[in-house]
Image (cartoon, rainbow, N blue to C red; front, top):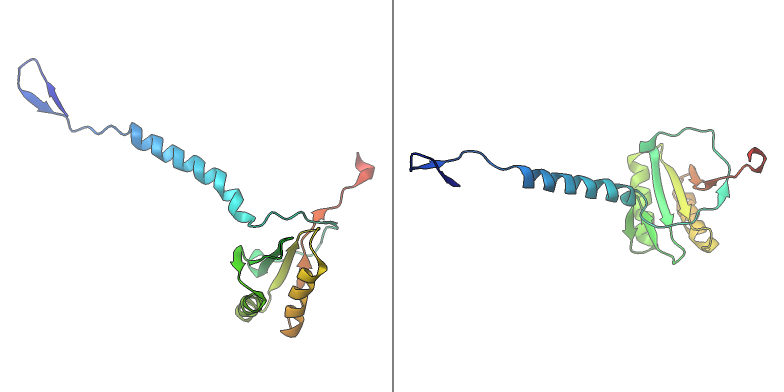
Length: 143
């Protein structure tokens, strides 16, 4: 950018306007803040009500397997093509971590077949640690 001074010769400014750059940074920040919670739950599942577990498990020992009411499976947020691929991914994760806990998220309106498929895979491969994800039970006495 050239600016003319009172002496009538051109002076080059060495300043950069960073306002558009800051605008872009703030827009990206807002986009990441909005999309991050959506990435944590990959399938919209209506969980059944259940109790609260007192057992604490390390987060790195949990493998989340999700089943939608349409019959789609996801392992750790990634869609699985078929049941043999589902079994392969669960077995590979168990071989990598012997303390693995399969956390099953199944829609309350889905068929029991989806849950039993995952349990059959676990039983065939010697995986005995699994849990159902559920919504906390509503305590009607504390209203």
